[in-house]
Amino acid sequence: MASPRTVTIVALSFALGLFFVFMGTIKLTPRLSKDAYSEMKRAYKSYAKALPGLKKIGISSVLLRKIIGSLEVGCGVVLTLVPGRPKDVANFLLLLVMLAVLFFHQLVGDPLKRYAHALVFGILLTCRLLIARQSDDRPEREDSREEQHVNDQEKNKVKQS
Image (cartoon, rainbow, N blue to C red):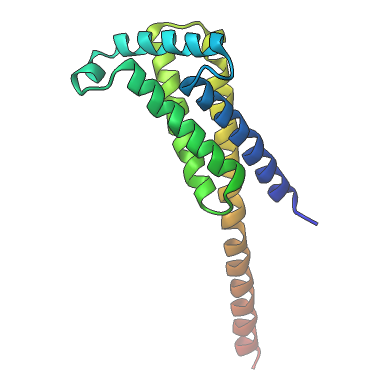
């Protein structure tokens, strides 16, 4: 039977992956929802206007939206389907994207209800990453404790003789 950590990591990975595939697809194409796609286009235009430095380096609102949407789709697919360490890399990249999105929303002065989803999913990504990293660190600590216990027993035998 799988440990609770494994179940949690798999469930979070699958749910977060599907969410980001969905949201990234909305940013890239109007096929899922024309209204949501139009809203994304409008929002990214306001982000690009608020950051004139992006235009100086050649990043338009369309390119910014496509970059973030592509990252979300790609990392979402990795979180959903790919086993092992690539999930942690995808998780970290999505966490950086969420921080950028939160920055954009703050920059244009959006109310909390407009960016609450980014905040919640940023927290979920952080939790998933911490749980995944914690499960990797734990066996090493137990191994070092066992080695310490064996060393202490050997020292006690030497003292008794």
